[in-house]
Length: 439
Image (tube, rainbow, N blue to C red; front, side, top):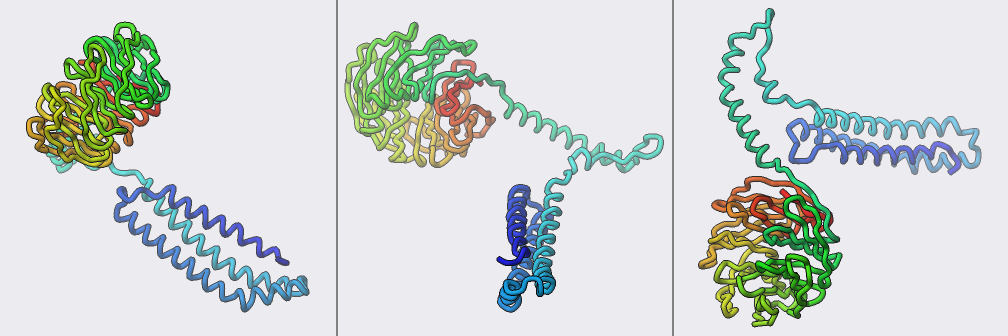
């Protein structure tokens, strides 16, 4: 450009950029803002406004001083070097002081947000006088707050018990999805490995891994055998639970997903053909195929009827197990995925609504809608409580069946899907971790 002073533009721009990044990195979230934070933020906005005002004002010198001066410098740099340096320093000084104001304001806000907070214990501690004697008034305050502190300790204890849970993680196949319990072992379908893994329930040891169909998803146990829905193979595979021997593979609908056992038959939801197939468990013969909603996923048997969650219809279908007749269809939340039965009610996870719905099994009346984590997916009943896996929160929620109160939230692996209860522990499949967690 003919003058070394123009090289100042790059450092100034870098300084501004880093100041903005610093604000983004260190300023606390809006939920943690207090009065002093809002005050600091206001000061920052004012400072930035002043900065840009002064910057715009300095642009007035460009046409009047800088450009003519640059032309003159190009003809005779040495003659006017000192004059141009003085004018340029005037503009740079304005920008520099504005940047200093922004940086100092940022430091104040950062110091406030990182400052030590006074704990309840410190706030109530009484001052110490000579000979280690407490003042009479401070002792009264301490005595009056004993009950309050005991109450806080009790609440803290309950919180700790609700959020602390021992867990173990066991490696299975690639992209594990569904899970079942056969009374002795845990079975996990590996949708990315085209296999199913069998683990000993007592210690998580892998007993065996067996080949099944393409993209295995849902899985169930019929008392003797394991049934696997092969989404990519449009079939179900039947394995002997004792040794993993494949006893048969049977064609069903398009892209099968969920599997349930009604005591005599196997029910398979076909998410791609919007129907459900009923097979005789003894020999795999297809007894019927019944239309349900769009993209059916989870399925459960309540002792008399079969319930199917229709993910793209935002409803659940109730069918009579004896003949497949559709008894009713009930609206639920957005993108329902999986279902559970607590002995009297049906529970559905609504993936898109981040909640679960409780319906009375006898008539489909909605008894409650309860918020859970992000993208709830799998759901099971442990005999007392409901457990929900949250694919977007990477945790599992424990809910009291009677009123939907959340009793605890426990971290598991990444993108949890299926879950099962073995009579003592809850097992959660972690799709993106390639593991299963035992709680």
